[in-house]
Image (tube, rainbow, N blue to C red; front, side, top):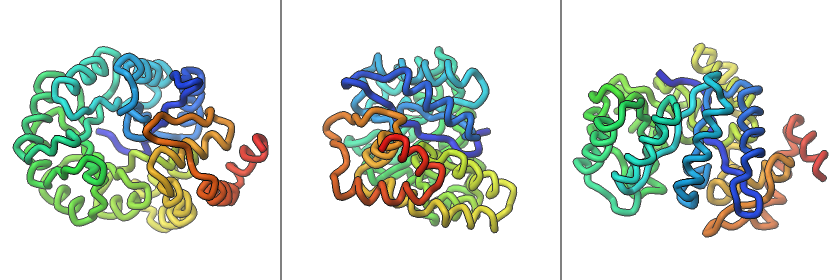
Length: 296
């Protein structure tokens, strides 16, 4: 149901408030450059620091700007099932095409707890659900066996897999027909080679056209082209995580003049040393160097 290059879009701020105009412009730029869908209010969108009002407003803006041209997969997860239900209901009412639900973090549920959490949301809100597995940030992994159980629920349609394990991806795909989207930019190519259908990407914030081209090539089975683009983008993939996400990607967009250089505590803006490294990497891409020169 969902395949392609989806951007985990940042949430821009101005004076620590949501910068609605900048968000709209970022979304327009993504659509213009071939991104297949918008994912607001994920980890990259700093969802843990958004108030409920801000969270819902970001989702509303994404839906307004996309206008049905590309799907919106709204981040709606929480470590509380009741909060997840609240955010999911809003996404459904606002017109989102699907929701992205992270595994409950910190409280570390068992596999039965994970199953019951996602099953409850799926049964109470009739909207397509994309599971989000990122154990490095949440402290809990959705086992392939649990994914298989969840895939039997009709509106659980995909999983964003960011465990970093190709073995786990292979187990999921061998067990059930759920769509797998990579949650790691550097693993998009190998995940697609075993049956993945795309990515929910951090790097697409910076180079949406190239990321879309990589995924399009993979979907067509044009592995030669996909491999070429993978290696062109590899320095970006790695440097988007030179510090905790979304610090580097927001720093990049700020240096390009697309957003203001603001991030919410407890995250802080990039160190001077890493900013210098990041600027050097960005400058190697002609389409980015032009924007960097305009803001110099």
